[in-house]
Amino acid sequence: MVMQHESDMTPEQVLSALDEAACLEAVRPNWARSRPEPGAGIPEFLDPARIVGFREYCGFPAETDAPLVAAARRIVRDPALVRLARQVEWLVYEADQKPEFKGWPSLRKALGMDAPVFYLLVGLGVVPHVRRHHRALGIPDPVTRETCFNVRCFSDSFAMQHQGQLGMPAGILAWLHHYVADKNVYVRLGRFDFWLKPFYGGAHVYRNQQTREVLALAEHGKRFASDGLMVGTGTAEESGEIWTSVLERDARCVRGHPVTPDGRAERGVRELPLAAWECVLEVPMPIADMHIPFGGGMTPEVCKESFGRIGPFFRKHFPEQFPVAVASRSWMFSPELDRMLPPESNLIWLQHNIYMYPHGGASREGPGHIFPKRPFDVETAPRNTSLRRAFVDYIQAGNAWHHGAMFVLTDDLPRFGAGLYHHG
Image (cartoon, rainbow, N blue to C red; front, top):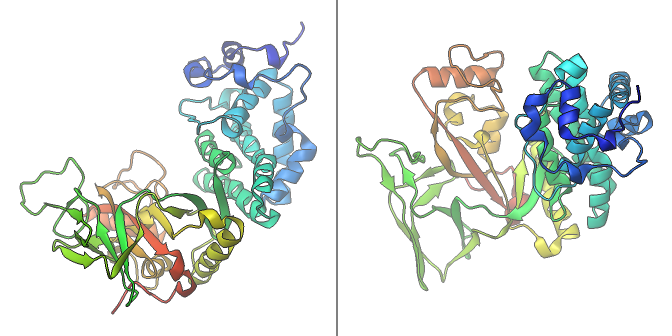
């Protein structure tokens, strides 16, 4: 029997061979665009010699060579697996839009315990793509290497959730698309990732030109509870405590509801004369959108080191798109964390050295990065870390929590760590 060449295989044939026919609708789009040229060799990330170099560049230990190479050799022997790998590679690294991997093959029937390694191998394939993209942008290799270390972080997160198993979920591969998209500047500088992009809003930020005071105003038309936290659109209003923010600006002044640096909006309106107050952050000004990779701790020292690199890096390499602020949206910027965690917590230290503002309504679901198993059940949620215990205790006491957002103006980064937005 002559084995069919992978370049000639249809998605129906591939999925039938892998006993994954139910995944056809997820896999079929753009299939023809990922078809290899006749005579094409195996993908780089399935070549044992390249795998060793890729895993080293991404910071994996040498003991992962054997399982990675063994899984790759197993995949290469099956044309259906090779063809599926090309489809994933094209979607992640070549497609114009960020892909979705909902409903994709688990590959447990075809690969057993090696199934998650299939997607990790495609993830390691990010290395040549990021290196080409960064070289074109003039980004130095040490920063490229730091950025590729995130593949190791994704794998470590997977291992923590799966009893130490080596691998990567298909869904997280979609995020790697951002690292190589043509117009994206996405780098890791120390502890944090920074993505150069337009500000997405949530607050309007002003600075007094004489005193240098910084004040955020809430966006127009947002609904808040009496504690200054944002209310979801489905929240009942019987209590009479809910109010809606206004923001008005004319040639003379701006009027709005101040947001305190701990992330709570005030009901009273404040008027800022534009002769004294300058708008320093609003849509669509450029920002360094901060993302927080898994692992590594968040001590004051590593936070200061990472934030201290932002200004010099972007000023040297992207002066025409220089970000006016670092900004981020995350469960880590929930004002309720101050009530959950001890004051000496690294997260609380970080919160006291940034300017937070409301983002998103209340939730009684545990954050997915802390409680990845869904749906979240407060009665059975794991309590094996201090952070998990704090969240479970807080929600069991009848409380809800909010996602939050934050910023630090780039001009203030040299003083980061001095609590410059918090007084008293």
